[in-house]
Length: 511
Image 1: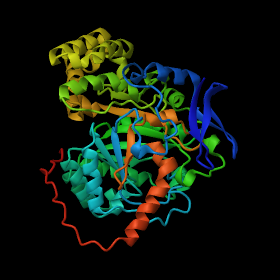
Image 2: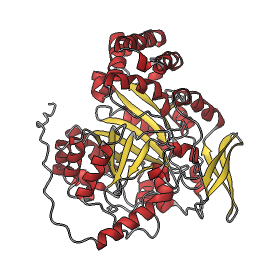
Image 3: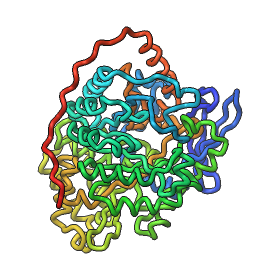
Image 4: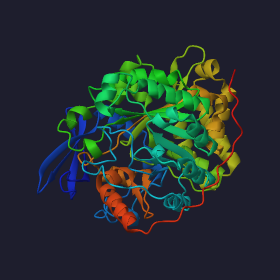
């Protein structure tokens, strides 16, 4: 089908690779001269692969030329000028400490458990300020770990990010939110926007096997705590074939019944990095069929063709830039990096409607792509007129009238292009959630062409910006080890002045 570059899972040397259709699945096949042949699943099926390629808007509006220095990728990320995408989400690891020891942790490799990696508060603030100076500036920062809430100063770090006008996201297993509600309130008061909560299964057998303990009750309590303080939740599910893939439909229905607080549900097929690196049964777990599972387990309410690559948003964002009058990174990742859609839940019946049931995507994106190609030469009135016409010619009037209202939907479409925030959605905001699947890579299915378009980037203490999959497969261990060793040699620091807390009005509970 096509050629690319990959890395050897044994020595990490860059090697040639081919993407091939093998029995209806897309596989990456490669050979290292020193360690032999390797083959791994790259994508779940040929028809869905083709569907994603079709809706990759970046292919029409972006730069897909080959890198000028292909030998550098993925080893010289901090000095690379060939990366095709800006940072949409900046990831900052704040600690290696964790109160769990999960078998599927991608951030801790065997033998690395004792690595003392924990940037100081000032180092983290410096990293945030570095990210804020990027052009374009990342809209969001995700704090990760380890378990970030093992740090007592996380509210202050959240406050620093909030002051720099980042959307703040906190990846957590939820235990500290349940055991210390005061901490949850402090996080909210200091500007935390979204809790990125791991939630893999409703079955405790899975949780004990993969996470080491029973978790369902705790996860439900964590969601209730977030509801109490109005901290929106994105559920994150590590998807493993034959272990929890039969629960895809149950997870989607759970999200649909809690859209007052759950803003998204993201499935992440297991990537064999970290503790899972040496699993001998990796291909058995990797043979996932997420899109088909969604259709089958929702009884067709959401079909395989209702899922689209994240890069479908390239055209809308080019138009948004004109209204915001500032640089904004495109969602220009590879169509194989993730598939998504917004799901609207009917307040009348509870039925789920992907948003392309309201707006015909083929017509809508054909219209606004033409607008986006010349967005810089158009004034705001011309852009609004094009958006309005695009919405009108592509709208399913009957369904829109029954469920949302024509005026409400058009208003939401226009507002989201002028001011892309959740609040722009108005009342619809509490009736929708983002459904997605983010397929991270490991050293077996690593594809340099995908890495080059990555939009989720780690920010390191040394002020480097490194694509997510390049960091976890190539750079993480060395960077964390080097930083930890330097910290041990550094003189003891004086206590830092506490970052002022941000105060917000106390929320009133609904009676």
